[in-house]
Image (cartoon, rainbow, N blue to C red; front, top):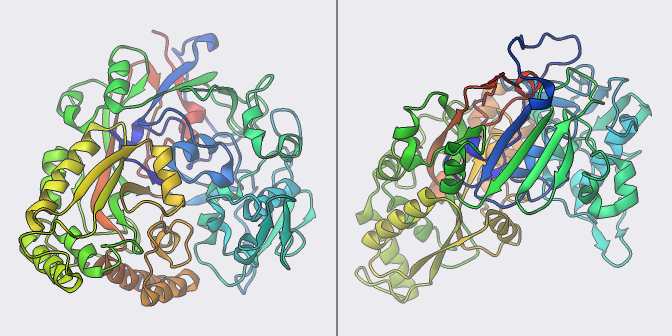
Length: 571
């Protein structure tokens, strides 16, 4: 799910979640006997490692901080349930799909509306999805809807920034591949069969956006969400967003299903994990998460939880920047790392060392996958790394086996705010220098949102990031990130054979055959070091004893049904 920086734990940054859910009107809730009065139903949460949410505009949400907020504010037609299966949300049922797999028909609930009373109809979704692909908006998550006929071409059209007009044959998808026969029916035409498309629709790119606010305020519409009594269209609405570390949401009484028992959720953002955790210990938050270095102590606390998650954290390299434009150097930097020691010493055994892009537990996980050295060794091989780097240095005349000081400089960029992340970078830097003596390697840290901007601009050389499950399909890990034309492919990683395999698997209706195609593509990409995987994460968190019903799934998020049933007990 989404790009994420590794903080103390995933739970500490998922301040408001909700890619999972289904408890609508008429479904049973939790017994709230012993609950505090409604006036006290306020949950205090925290986000660690950033000072603000990057965006609340659904099709521009490409990071975990933004997505976790968007998913409880704007309704999707379908969501993922707690078993990571697609289920109806604003739709009455899963879509009807034509026999050729190209036409997807969604039927909407008739009682959908925004908190200001404006109806949410099929035309709302058509507007929102068309807006998501409009090239004049340049949204970061447009890629999720590229399976729709003409969507990729539309998104690639040229926009005149002065006039806001599109210069090209495709002016809109509405009336083309997106149609609305009536207010409660949405039809979507795909370019070719896409087995994963239902899951792609669970991503915020297809979520409803309020046309009335967009028309009134343009690109700045999200700055007006907290105006008046606040605004939202899902479980919650925004009542405060000051951009100085505070985001407050209130229960949306216009929500069509079972309304949250919590009256308000107040989020405070902290620059670093230690400060955030200390605030939790001091009683300034109701849910918190210890840095990895303090997890042993945290495990002794009542209310501690830890689960495995579908999240891979990795270093990425820009294939167009020396020395990573040479596969030998990409392999050398990978093979030099002792990933086991990193997992045990830096992360205190809270993570699983890996060479994989597709995580363990995901359909298509390949237990036979080997690393760039052709083995399943995770302890590193500095001798082989030196041989690869020496061959490069000899060819480019930048160094020898004992002195790489004149080779192209390398800067590792990490997100600020995590002592664990800093410790990992320092430890890995020493491993690189052991394999490649005197190599000019520096470490720099920037705000997480700044790192995302640098990635989007393809201006970063080597960086630390994570990918957290959007939906349980290898397409989310492989094609979404590493197809040659993927918007998320910040490092220009591109192998034509792997690309062909991924694109074929995306449309393959034969489950076993498509998983094999993904595995073949992954093996190529691991050998070529499209990613430099470091570990698969776990997530851990603590709750105060009066917080009832807070949960986190294997996707690393709190499901909507938990938000519907969570409450503060009398204390």
